[in-house]
Image 1 (cartoon, rainbow over the protein chains, first blue to last red):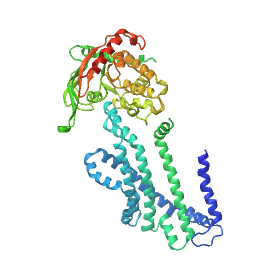
Image 2 (image 1 turned 60 degrees about the horizontal axis):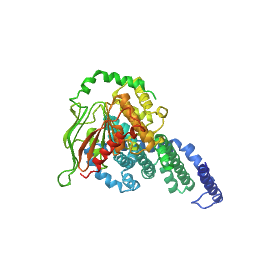
Image 3 (image 1 turned 60 degrees about the vertical axis):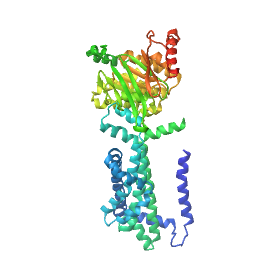
Image 4 (image 1 turned 30 degrees about the horizontal axis):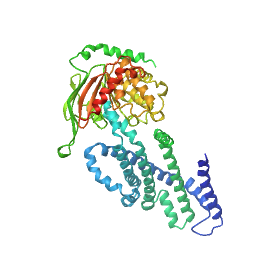
Length: 254
Length: 280
């Protein structure tokens, strides 16, 4: 309960402080928050909502969804099919040491113009964290659990979908979390570099045209979207992994 | 606590072919010159040297031996999880080459053998799904198994919400719902407290009575082995081999207090203990 109060109060206080401290600002780079919010409403809620906000969000979700499904599928193939493992293992070891964000420049350089290419680069960049986490998750499933599955003669399909997949889900979700961050970064970067549409493109355009309030409004929107997307993600995680969260809490309590 | 439904069912399936099972010539479970070596060449480590013993239908046999003797390896060979290096294990004369359909296993570590993402009932249902049972039979089997272990009230809870003893009973219920003819238990009561342990031992004997199962229990607890078993297979260590098969001749039905205070009980456990203690 107290956590909630602080969690809500802290950002509100910050906004209030920003509001009053910037109220009479004449600094061209730090316009008053009031101006920013007015521009925010004008820009994002009406004028560019469909053409830019929805476009960006659509790219983000489509790219992330492809990355999640392909990452999990590739992870399973890598962990379970020997020839795929031989192919992927060196790549995984190579990628494991590199923070996912460091791969972003590669994908940015691949970005062309056009939505398809942007979705592709979001998906490609976001795929690896999920794939690696899936491989690790499957490999760390206890051998006892697999022995149980064998002794009770579970079919191969059951072993994959009803034992390996749920057992690896906690780790898969950690991978998805990183993938989501990467997808978000690549979404913005792809728009800033290769597009005239989208929140990233609008924000950069505002900066280049010295429309500082518009730029701040863009950054504010990105922050809000990031915040909401993360809340959605943790709600999903809480639903899917309720057994895991519950058992961990119990283990800590005892 | 009644499991009349499931008992009746079991009896009807047993009635169809009891003669062949009880014939003296083919034991239910036959282990002959079984050996298991890990690795090869200079790094080879022989865990099991040469094991020979049999388990007859409806018998409870306990395998005791010092810890680290390779009991778990033996069970993995019997359950078809690992191939034997030489010799063989057979059920009704058929060599075991993969997990046999008539066998269920209760593992030592209930913590890692139950699916934490499934409720108790769903844990019981998972091994039964590929058997394509009717919904009614599925429910009947699960209800019967849960009742037999006294957990009817817990079927919607998750295993990790239960105590250790209850979790092990879930693992036993899962085995019962599978309706195996042979039940193998790997140190099933090693990680529960003493009182729960007595309860679970009696549950084991009750299962034998009610379900007419053939039960093989691996344990390092000599008292437990003598209390449970019709015969005790005493293993010597490194590499494992059979020291002696001790026939336990205690009057049934056994009871934790009266059976354990019989002079005969003390004599049997002393016999087993001295076999294990004796320098090989």
